Picture (cartoon, rainbow, N blue to C red):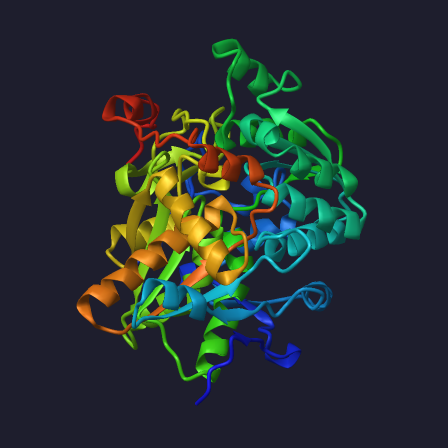
Length: 453
């Protein structure tokens, strides 16, 4: 059968339900705990902070959850997204491997984040909320949520990690174009931000700190809730549309991946891509290798601890059992962008702990070597986050060349890098560093871990 360069599903083939990866595991993740009582959180515990329907989804164990018709209508503006075979990359690598990637950068926000931003804004509107707050690292989530909030007529305040707001001023401009208010974090507008600045006036920020500020602002704003774009279960749930579409498209081609690779920050893109294949692996119907790729500068899986921890610096969130570097970990200012988070989604953490998933960490320059090769062969400039997955796929394809064994490799191209030109300039100029934290650098973060079994 002749395989097309790009494979698109038709609108009728787009999934009409999200897949709950947590429900597919035989050994599900430990429950979130209330930080005061240390008891599993309930709907009533999180409803004052989260949108009601999202709180229900966070705690739900149903294997599938129907996608509302209004959200399906929104998805049809950008989905199904293309599955692409990387013929030119295969040729450049001289590999017998077949390389496919699911491209989530074709929508206006430029990344997979719109898959969750749309339903989150819809459910907020349905509840009658008028304001939302959030954090964003590299800016993809803030951009996507700004678009969704503009569509549904909701005011949005974004706390953007300071180093990213400085590296990506145009991301901030896009968010403001859609009507969002953008505050570099840490800021002097919240108690959490003031505390961070008091400790380090030159702080470049972190996702954990931005989360603290967004949570505080939500609790102090009338008719407002906090929403987020990664880490928690309901976000991975929404992103499952990536993996469900991918499996349908590969089934059309008679293909099944031997290796599935995704970049790993908080876990939304990775969890969304692997969901259907992870379910097959758990059920024993197939055994694909699943590889999480993270930055060596923020190695939550490869060097973190499997422990209950807070999701934010101010230690206000529920306790989450996950692989973590500790909420007190301060990531180095580099171009890993949205992957600079101290923890990992609890379902993915449990999978890694149980040996269902592998993990590898790469330094910055190796990642950008892969990004440039991909741009020159496949024609798309990838986001730095997505380029971690590209590096993983290239390494697996080279192994195939060296062994002479052909495998089918699937990776997620979660977004484009057209707002990341400072990173590419730093790479080209040679000023990009390969900072990797020492054990001493990681020690303060581990010391901040709560003593909870």
